[in-house]
Length: 441
Image (cartoon, rainbow, N blue to C red):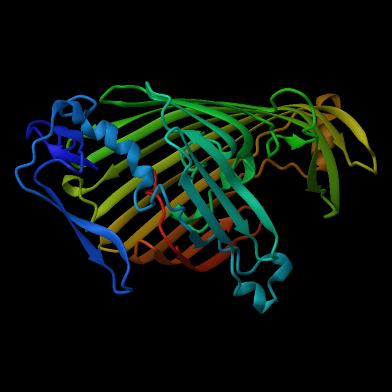
């Protein structure tokens, strides 16, 4: 077994901790089984009486055990020998979507069921799969990957289908979000949440300050890529750099800069013209998205049990260059396209008492002025490009009876569509069944 032992009282609380591996046959260690109410033996009590551990049992440097232990948090509450089953009820959709606003059943539906499997494969690899069941009973694989656990020197390699490590919110599953939905900038510039099939290499520097670098290549199957992905070569490339640390014993932070570049080949885009008619366009070209993200967290003396506060924000900027085929099947006119769009959000979440949180989020999009080449003015007019900047403000309060369930009430004043103020009310319930890993920072 392993132990985290206090070997120094100086410095920050997470310093002065040493990581030890213990042979269970060491003199002074005794184990007493704990029998559950179901009559099963799953866990034990371990007693130490004058136990001495040789230096060969130390992992890493003395007083630097937390640097080693923080990587094990991903396996917290999830046994390496028994895959965990997690079912989350999440992603509650709009209760009054335009196409279903008169349908009572649409207002009371199961938003999504997510089934997660995760386990250690051997001493060198671990794997995970996340399967989502949608309200229409369709099934999709959100993530399915294998990841190394023993490359050493801070390196880790992941292969398969995964959410990209760009930004802050992108790699987090919906049941960990602080609001029912993700920000407008993510929806407009990343298609909601960017995932791909490919390889991801990350490196964590051996320093007191958290420094993490990442690089990815993939097919480019999702927006802002997409279309025909049968081509040779990588359709997506991504780079990310994040740094973070502690400020005193009550504050911590993380900030980063990421870049995603995706190729599209015959990507279908659906738009509405000034007359309200729906038209289909095809885009082929490259899209580059830059993301700057920052998070600041406060908890008295590092203890978030009773009260805490998190301030989080991201800025996204997208540049698209390529060819647009306008009104496929109709006018069918091709021309150059260059479009620069951006968006941001800022949110604060305050835990004002145990299990209760209050959150506020404000966000805005800038659609920019797309350049369609020589016919830019006439084409922009026919597409109804007015330069309108969508925005939304959201207020939420949630109650967490335990770490496995959450009830959330959310109100949003949504002005994503020009001239329309959409007041949205969500009542969301989430639950998880079975063991699951700890959530990221």
